[in-house]
Structure formats: structure tokens, C-alpha cells
Image 1 (cartoon, rainbow, N blue to C red):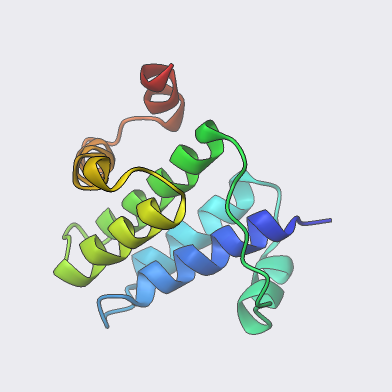
Image 2 (cartoon, rainbow, N blue to C red; image 1 turned 120 degrees about the horizontal axis):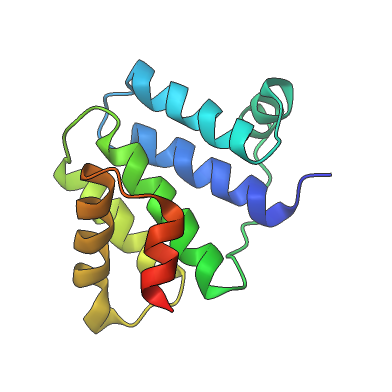
Length: 129
């Protein structure tokens, strides 16, 4: 059973991929890679994307919030560029995940820099502790 939280995450990733009006094949591959990492089959992911529910939920733990935001940053870098629309969308999700307004630019920049350098999720979460 896939949680509402995880479904919401995949829908956010999908939305991020479309935010720059240039849905790249690398972004789609990244989406399926994230699904595979979390034990979600291609069929399950397709079902989530084709039948999005309106029950959006945010991750409960700080670690999961950062992990999900980092996935978004990695998705942004899939095509090796960051558009203004993607940057704005990432900051919107930082805000939605209840990070303080004064920290949002710094957090978004940090996550994008880590994604550009291909730093592991585990390393980022370790740095937060």
C-alpha cells in the first residue's frame, strides 16, 4: 500500500518536471528511478500520475521533508539547468513543508547546489543532524 504522503511526493515531482514547460526524458527517467528506490512499480506510479488524488499531504519528519525536497532539486538538475520557474516551484514546496520564510532561499540554493554536485541524500540528512 502506497501512502498518501508518498503519492503526494510523486505528484510534486511530476509537477516539478513540467514547471519549466520542457518535460525532458531525463526527468521522466528520474521519476521512475525515485519510484523504484521506494519500491513503487511502474504500474503503481502510472496509476498515481494518471489518477491524482486531491489529498495532498506533507511529510511528517524533518528528514523526510528534506529528502523529498532534495528529490525535487535532483529532478530540476536532470536536464542540467535550473529555470526560474523550477526555482520558484522548489521554494513554494519549501514553504509548503513549513520551513521558515527567512530560510527558504538558502535552503533551496543549498539543495540545488547539493543536487548539482550529486551529493547523496544520506549525506545531506547527516549534515542536518
